[in-house]
Image (tube, rainbow over all chains, first blue to last red; front, side, top):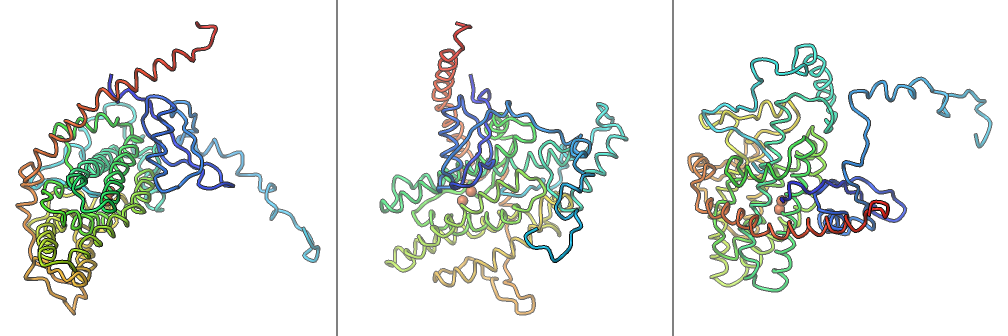
Length: 95
Length: 349
Ligand SMILES: [Fe+2]
Ligand SMILES: [Fe+2]
């Protein structure tokens, strides 16, 4: 048994009410409870957060940088999803 | 070591060279070209490189080594100051010092996590520290003889560390840069509390003034050495400065950062009423910088290679802490296993 086998956890911190949780970093811990406590000590020593999530790193599925082009391509040719795409008269208000 | 990376004189770094023959498809010329184009493009546009991006092997090994040695410096750096926690002169100072030392443990953790994004394991890096295969900043091999040393470390050592670390907030490797942003935010308290310790001593009794002066005398030169050997001239090491700058890991040369540090620190010493132990220290109107005397690089290499006043003690203490903490890690693991078994779905039981 060694700390080498402790799983890795990703830590997400909500800085203030009204904001979403943002990835802060990672840490090793034997279980989720300890991960949460360690995350408090490592990432919020100066009141940087009001809420913490820890997620086992191995449970995260990520897109691959190798297919970054093909993966995000479908959005590239759909300019009509943006409001600036449309021609409307300039003197119409609230549009 | 403390946010920079340098080779030893007359040695070539085995990690920096490519193997003579490709070992797998990922090292064939076609692949290498495609990778180089993508990676060089990112670097050229001053974009951040992220963990799963393709990157040259030498970039990866350089970063792992630099981040590991930076992390080691943070946790070994806890020892000289921890030496004064039980003897801090007041409850206020004790609480401050504990918070500072705890921050350094945190800095170590941020950096080990950042290194792990490149596929190494923290335990592997700790092994290398414990067995002397990876170094830490030579500054921590000097003893903290008096309470004033706690002040001199905060003022000079953390001050120099900040100088090294601020440019790393723009380092090309995303996780390293982000860790540095957190570290730098915390470091400014470290520097200020150190200055405050000396500020109080420097306005105290004759003994207290002498203590502050003595600490500055002993820490000044080792602090200047923290920036690493010169980039050019007879004392330059086989160094990685040029390559690290091309890769956007490093933003300023060792000598530039050292000069900035001297320029920042001399007026602070004057304010404290402390002299710095360098007869050649003089304002150079023409350059617009402070001139300073020659640094003893032989001492630097000697201490880095193991022959400093505290090298042996630092590693012994570190290994001892690791070994004596084994039962805690094992207990936590046993508890985690028990909880996991208890929460198995009913159907399994
Ligand atoms: Fe630090
Ligand atoms: Fe610090």
